[in-house]
Image (cartoon, rainbow, N blue to C red; front, side):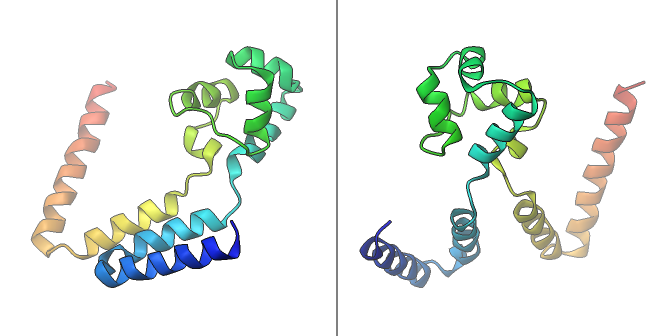
Length: 141
C-alpha cells in the first residue's frame, strides 16, 4: 500500500469513527490484525514441512494446481473458506490455528458484555450455562 492509500484509509477511518464511535474497538482489532503478519502462509508451510511433504504432493492431496498451493504458502492468495476445514483436518489442527485467529479478542468482548449485565441477568446467564453443561454430562452417559 503506498503512502497516499494509507493516508486515505486513515482519513476514512477517522470519519467513520466520528460518525460511529461505537465501532472504535472493532476497528482497532481489525487494524491490529492487519498489522500482524498473516500467519496462514507460515503455518501452512511449517505444517507441510513437518510431515516432509513437497509442495507438489500437497497440491495433489488438496486437489489444486501447484501454482495455487505455492501462492497460498507465499501469501499471494488464500484458499476458499470451504477448503480451510479440509486443510486443517489433514494437518490435524483447527481452522482457527491455521489462520491465526485471535481468541483473546472474542474472550475480551464476552467479558465486557457480561460485566455490563445486571446481577439478575448474570445469574440468568449462569443458569443457562450450567444447564448446558449438565446437558453435556447427561448426554455422555
